[in-house]
Image (cartoon, rainbow, N blue to C red; front, top):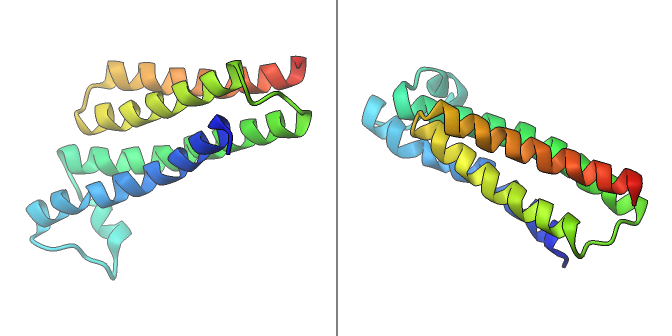
Length: 131
């Protein structure tokens, strides 16, 4: 597998990492995790618990954009070695830390990570268009 494929795989796991990361906050705030109505319970989380849920939702959104960017690159025949791989690795790191800063409630750093991840996806599309 190429680095962009590994990066997609890592990106697929990020929303689940944040989903499972909400469990301690659910237990702390509510005493249990409501597996019958998890979304309703998630909406009631506060502070870092709310940040974990936000990180999960945003991870799904970013994965969609990143996935399409990689599909475009693949279909255009872009060489998976070089800048595409570098952009994909930077995306994974930026997206991981986006979640960390979301939970830690550090908006400025979260926005930098968001912009970096978005920039890497756009760069992949640009490389595919000009490759």
